[in-house]
Image (cartoon, rainbow, N blue to C red; front, side, top):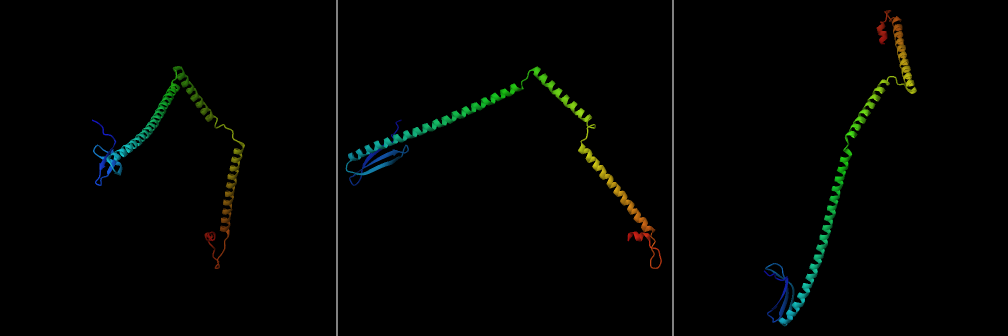
Length: 203
């Protein structure tokens, strides 16, 4: 099946005995669109000459535009290809780093039987030393010497307690003496009756 050209031209005669030339573009398989039109030609030959020249110009512009589009598309394709290559290289690098890291971790945790036994022995020895130190500290805790300032603080606290205790005893003795003195005082009322000692205390 032959492919129809994108641009064609035609020259038609009008009622006023003039000719009109048109440059047509194939929009769809069944539809054509007039891209350029020129009227007022005296003969068909003049219209054909104009149409051929215009068609050449239109085709040249069309080819140049397609070339620019092709170059733009090629540039875009190169950019996409470059980005894809960079992404692939980055992914490969990350994968290599992950593999290397995994291998290093496996190697660091891979010990020979002798190294494992030595590590267990060192760990047990360290635990025993820590236990011995804790027991020794506990045994010597009661015999630990106190600092001078701690002794001074304790002495001050004891002195304050003794002074407070003496003050309480003295206060109690004074209160008892006052009560006895009030009880011994036998005052009389106006009619000569004795005043109740409890009343005097409450007063």
